[in-house]
Structures are given as C-alpha cells and as structure tokens.
Image (cartoon, rainbow, N blue to C red; front, top):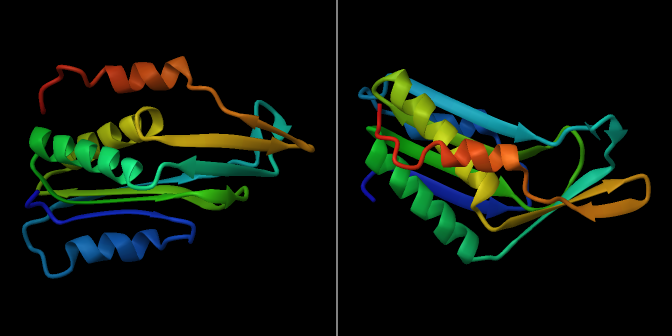
Length: 158
C-alpha cells in the first residue's frame, strides 16, 4: 500500500485532531479531510448504559482492517487513511473509533470514510458487550448495519 496509512488497536483514547494533522502535515495535494469519531452513548433504546466492553482478536483484527483500507484505496483516490479502534471497557462519552481519510476532493474522502465505517461495524472481528444496571449482554449483529455494508458490493468508485 503506497497511501500513508495508520491502523492501530489500543486501549488508550486518541486525539482526532492530532491524527488528522499527521495526515495533512506538509501536504499540498490534499483538498479534503474527513474524520469520523464513534463515541459511546449513555443509553441504548432508552436504557442507561454503564459501559461498553470491546474485545478483538489481535493480529486478525488488524489484518481485516488493513484489507478494507486497501480496498478503499483501490476504489477511491485516497491520499491518506487512519483507523484507530479502541478495545477494553469504554464509558459513555468516551471515543471508540476514529476513521480519517484524505483526498484531493471531498467526494472520495467521504465515500472512503463511510465505506470503512460500514465495514468496521460489520466485518472487523470485534465483539461488543453492553453493561446496563448490573447486567452484561453481548450485542448481536444488526440487519441495518449489514445492509449498509452490503450496498458497497459491486459498487464502483464515484
């Protein structure tokens, strides 16, 4: 992959602005930066959440994310990508995931970021447990998330 890429899985929080700045520093060919930060909500279906716990398969998760980043770079003229995904116990209000894409033009940066988030949500090997009022439950995949990821199948770059 020749596109500057950062893929990290970590327990620690991240600084979205600093990560975006790393991708653009010294670059004059970048005309668009898209950042998406997923944040732990304080409720789910009207019920308070105490925390989320995210687990993953080390090595496998990075490989899967890399595969999708490579696909995004093949589909759109992306000039840089950063994907940071946290794992462990995450409290409401804390950041979970960051996707930053850069391109000469906004359409490619937006499409690549959305593509990556759809795949991170459905294909990356992460498991989410929700902690509510003394009970912990593993979250099942949602049909709406699968449908969002499926829309990219066979869809050419715009």
